[in-house]
Image (cartoon, rainbow, N blue to C red; front, side):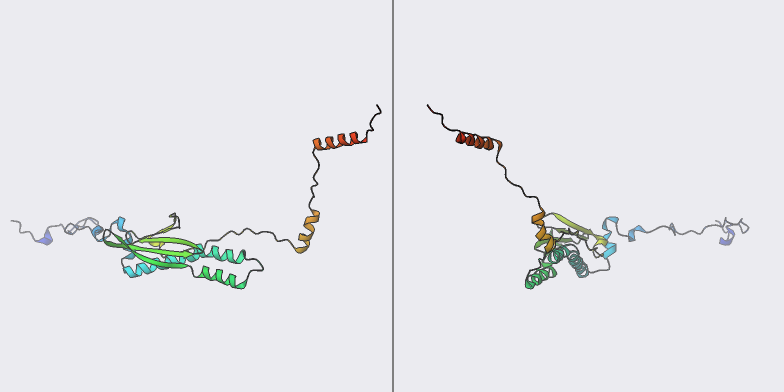
Length: 218
């Protein structure tokens, strides 16, 4: 049996840097306990673990509203403001502008998958077009489809709730002629005069020659 005291197990005069290491019961201080971290396939848990389902739904709804306002509504407003003729009734212009401002979500429905709550489906109407947006709670994804079922936009994770840039619409400017230019244009343009065909002209000349000849005496 070893009766050596614990203090005498290691020599006291050891070179610097060679001090004995304390046992840590197999635990490495630099080791990361990955059991406490979520799997990479469920990364959305790290983003939404502090939000309730109601808060997440409100974020998705607000993001869809901003997308409609930034992507679809400006085209309608641009058409109303740029394409309006000078003699258009003010009431018609106000109605068209009001339709563009009232664009948004029309109805919502709960998305059920395998008997469990899986997300939400939105139906939106703006500028005369209908859009269907589906939010999948797991994974956190929002897909927006057009009237024909074509995928228009898709957002995932941190993209939902982020700022949406306003889409700039290229407007083709049509030159407007002044009244003086409009009056001078018909006179200045070349005028085409219809000419008879070559066969018709030769036939006409032949008839005139026969008419000019006198009948000979028998």
